[in-house]
Structures are given as structure tokens and as C-alpha cells.
Amino acid sequence: MTGSLTIRPVVTKRDRRTFVDVPFRLYRDDPNWVPPLKGEALGLLTPEKNGWYSHAKVQLFLAERNGATVGRISAHIDTLALEMPAAQGFGPGTGQWGLMEAEDEGVFRALIERAEQWLREQGMTRVLGPISQSVWEEPGLLIEGFDHPPTVMMGHAKPAYRGWIEAAGYAPAKQLMTYELDITQDFPPIVQRIIKSGEKNPRINVREVDKSRFDEEAAIILRILNDAWSDNWGFVPLTPPEIRDVGVKLKPIVFNDLIRIAEVDGKPVAFMITLPDLNEPLANLGGSLWPFGWAKLLLWLRRPKVRTMRVPLMGVIKDLQSSRMASQLAFMMIEYIRRASVERYGASRGEIGWILDDNQGMRSIAETIESRVNKVYQVYEKAL
Image (cartoon, helix red, strand yellow):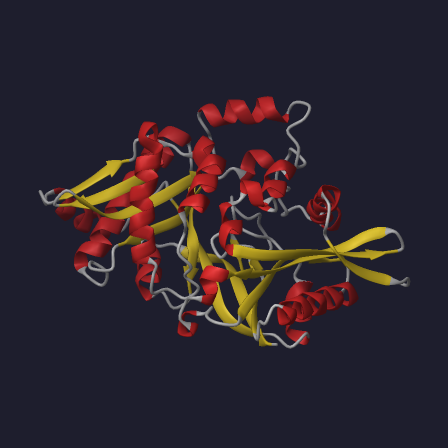
């Protein structure tokens, strides 16, 4: 398309709304894109509503041509990521870009170059992307699994983006995978034996969370998570402001029987979070709760009936990792949540992930319960 292309920074609240609107036009004919609620998407870009901004510096950019907005990108620096060991993916001098959408490759390249320029101006010497925006939100570019919609808090993308990124000089840094499985079927006999053995062990207690003690339960999970994931590629510790704001966002889809904490000798040592797939009711709302979407969503939230349950996070403290008990606790939590998902929510499909390609422990658990990879996301890197 001809016409002068302009890349400009997002400055005003109106600019942020325009930023949120970009994918609504670019994906309007894609049946597998799920429109987010615009208010939620705007909240992620608003420092007062997103605790991640307490340790991040961000600049959003819009691409405009012939009076129309044709693309967007976020360039950002997570100050906690700068403190992480370089061998774990981030480290000193590493910035990121994300939330990239573009009408064509020319727009894409111009946005990438502008984000890289901003990062250089901030003293960065290396860039990872896409990471939109926190590594705990939607890291990676979808490169496999375009034929079905993403689940809640997972990303979607145009297939062409992969070639455009690689043509801009980026190399693969890490792959993230999601696994799907039929949860209406019992797990293999070996898994059932492991679960029954754990149930006979008086040291083990796997309990539901208590939503009425939300803050206390969230603090327990945060402690386990930051310990369990601390050696993983891309790890950045979650902070109390982030947990607070994520809690506000997710509390409506938190149900006691879908989140479990495993205790050994009375000490919390593992957890598993499962969420009903909010993307199912959102798919037909067009990003807005008005005029009648709010009523539909409210009815759904009272007792969700869904096809898919997503497991976004689970973890076992480092002291138990690589032990037989770690996998036993994982299988017990998965089985108890599987039963609740089928019996109480009508679910038939589960999705686990994302899982790092080198996380052999979690990949082994996923494969043992006969799940298969259904989507692959890739994070890229480049020297600046």
C-alpha cells in the first residue's frame, strides 16, 4: 500500500484506546482470534491498574498511514529482568518488545526498528520478543496451532509474522508449548496407582483453596511459585503489586475446587491453578460488555459450563523437584481437578501450559497423562 508511514509514540488516553483497537481491525476475519474485553486490555496498559509497571519502563508506538492506524508495538524494560542471570534468558542490557501487530511487512519492520531504537536509547544491548508485556502475560509468537482459538491468557498471531521477524534478523531463543488432553478419560493405570499410593501417605494432604481467604492463599501460592520457578529460563519474580492486580482480574474465575495446594507434613509445597476458559464466552462479545454482554457473562460466571479448562501455573518447591514425591503430588492435583472439571463444570478438554521446551519434568508429566502438544510459541532474540 502506498502512502507515507509514520511511527509515533502513544501519549494520551485516546492513543491508548487506539492502541487497543488495532487487532480488532486486523483480525476481524480470523475465526480463531478471540477479542479481549477492551476495558481489560486497556487496564494492562495503564500503570495504575497493572502492578507490573512498578518495576517496568514502557513506550508504546502506533503506526499510521493515510490517516489510518496500521500497526502497534510496545518497547519495554523490566528492571527485575535486568537483575536476572543472563544464562536464564534475561539479564543486564536486555530489553523487550511485544504487543506487535502490523498490516504488512513494511509496517512491521518500521515498528520493530523504532522499538529497537528506543531500547538502544535506554542503554539496552540485546532484545527479546515478542513478550507482551510481562513474561507472565503472553510471551512468545504463535508458530504452530493456528487452526483453533487460544485459551484464556494465551496469544494468537498471524502466520506471516514468523517470517517477518526472522527476516528482521531475529533468531529463536526459546520455545513454549501448550498441551491438550481429553479429560473425560481416566488416566493410565500407572498414574492411578501413583495417585492411590499418595492418598495412603499420611504425610500428604491435597486441599482446595479457600476463596474467602483470597489474599492469604495467594501469598502461599506466590511463595511456592517464586521458589519453584526461580531457576527457569525467563523467570522474573512476581511481586505483591502484580499479584494484587492479577487477583482483581482473575478473582471472578477463581473457584475453590479448581485450585489445589499440596501439603507435606503440614507445609505447603506445591500448587496447581486451573481456570475455566473465559475465551469461550468472550468469543462472541466483540470486546464489549454492552449492551447485553455483561448479563451473559454474569450468568456464566455464577457456574461456568465450559469445554476447556486451562492450567496456566503449577509448581513444586525446589527441595522436592526431581523427587518421586514431586510427580506424585502433581498427578494427585491434576486428577482431583480433572474430576471436578468434568463433574461440576461439564468440561471435556484440558490445556496445560505454557511449558518451556527444556522443562523435561513438566513435559514428562504431560506426556504420561497422554496429552499432546497443540500450540507452540517462540521467543526471539537479537543483539542491538
